[in-house]
Length: 208
Image (cartoon, rainbow, N blue to C red; front, side, top):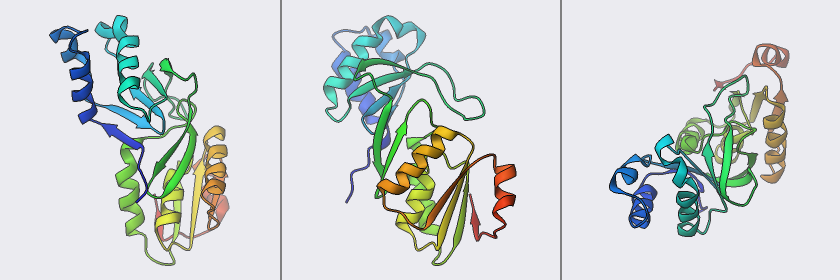
């Protein structure tokens, strides 16, 4: 069974609070968000304004607790813009926002700031793949770095899986992920779905 390192850590916050109880007050501990996300070797946390002066301590403690995490970054804004990306600020560990995550029998390389990717959708991607029937043609719109495309191609008997993504960075990572996972029944297209999909001139059994 393949290790899944795309996830939202809820229980991890309880352990983090325990580890920080000598360094933070009860009020400060209560301000810690209920969970944090892990994408490959990067942990992404929310740091409330009241805890910004302690963010390096919090991040370093998280690094010390989780040997599979090399980088801790905090959200420095919301997902926004045409590409739905989110600014991140590294506060501890390696100074890299590129990582390789594993989920549902696939490996996904991506840049956590330049590409939209949600580890919280890992279970949903598996659920969708299990719905795909043998011989189906599947279209994934807004395919990003191709997580849905790769998971469906690897975990179903789909005839073919197409993905369309407007973000050039996401598209390039998607192409690389097809190579990494040795997927030969998928095609990716870079462009606006409103323009790209009609040009495909194909009928699909399932559209996401």
